[in-house]
Image (cartoon, rainbow, N blue to C red; front, top):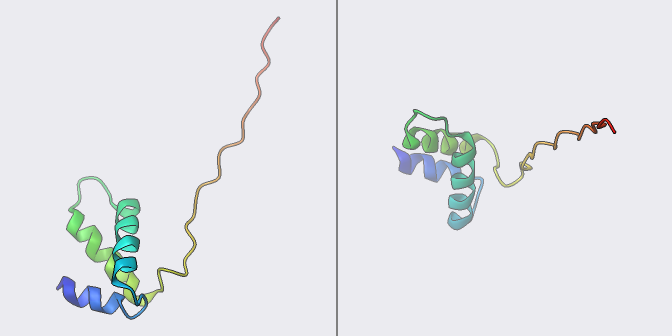
Length: 73
């Protein structure tokens, strides 16, 4: 049941509002096309039971280096 997942995740996050914000961000990042959104949300809450989501840094991919091209004059 999802309520069990929420209460388990609250062991690491004391604020319910913060838990909702973190869960929605993680669900958007981890959701795969052609899968149910509910399953992705349950997976995120299951991960939050074992780790502290507030302490994990958000990883932002580094931009690709720009390659300069010379044009013929």
